Amino acid sequence: FGHEQGAYTGASRRRIGRVEAASGGTVFLDEVGELTASMQLKLLRVIETGEFQRVGSNTTLRADVRFIAATHRDLAVEVKEGRFRKDLFYRFNVVCIRVPPLRERREDIPLLIDHFLRAHASPGDVPALISPDALSLLMDYDYPGNVRELEHAVESALALAPGPLIAPEHLPDLPPPDSASA
Image (cartoon, rainbow, N blue to C red):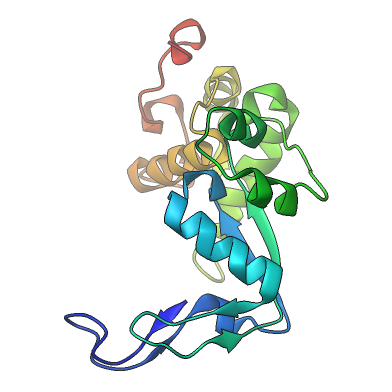
């Protein structure tokens, strides 16, 4: 929500918050299930009324913002267990898109690897390639850290590979499939 100059130690100037900056647009909230109870209440107020205050201010501001939220938690369970506000849950639960974890959509792994190899290539360079053996190892892993874990594995391999081909020895140590979920 931003802050005013002098609102706390180190607040040397006014900072516009994400909600205010996105007025007329969309704010994406990643891991909304991790919000504290006080932040859930503040967010609910913005969603319901469009009103918020910067830290250190008594002035109420307004923003017309659409919110999109993501979480790895089952928010219905979080509501039942008292960790997530029911009213906020219903505000977010208008359109729910479930994206299965990577271990349930292994067919996406080669496509994602290709994307990460291209994304991490230097401008003008040909992206690195992955050997069939390295691809096989990456396909067999369960990715408890999901797509981010796959991306980090590709980044690590790119840093360790001496040339344009990623081989199994360039991959980070991945636990075998039967112990990945332990």
